[in-house]
Length: 321
Image (cartoon, rainbow, N blue to C red; front, side, top):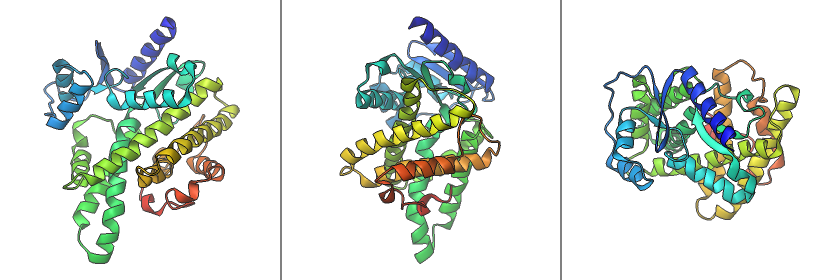
């Protein structure tokens, strides 16, 4: 276990460093910061952020790190990551999952080569962070566009949200870097998309949480089945992991459907919309992942509830991605 954990930390930091991020480790976990940020960069944290971070045991030193642009990359210092990993372990009920190390890092998306013959999961940090933004943008646009079309208005707000969404996609695709000063436009758009009562943000966050659940289930499937490879076999293994994650999510969503039907019906179709949008920004074919459209088709054909999710075969609400 110690050797696997040590290798996990080495690979995690190496991928961050090679992508242009400095890393530090303290008692709370691993942190990364974009090297392009000036040393005096500072963003005051909102009171709600401070309260949430304090509740998970982060110290004043940790809060100072976050205000200066350091991003939490470990289960121990990232509440969203810790929550979804705990939920996945509970849902799977497999003791082997307790030995799987999970963290965030920066590396080319849709590339499984970093995982071959390893027993840990390193999720793409910009994707995990960006899910909240993109889901909130999607909810806001799905609500605002029909009103704008029927009654007019909202043109400036819609344009700002669409620009913020596009910039966020560029960051996830690696065309821009997360945590830089030029992300301010996307941040302002995100704040504007929340609305006066935060209803877009609340629903967007719930959708993103369901998407993180799917992503972690997908990665755990690879490790539990010991099938992470590259080459011709990798594509079929991705399809199998997609089906495993979707089947498990469908079981979970069915139990939770009464709580928020829109959340569970939007999460997975929107995630595949996101994958397709990223592929348009990264035209080179992945060596380890099939095209998102093929993955969507396989999942849709095998998922009984898909016609109830995101409008069926085509997801009109989120086609803007």
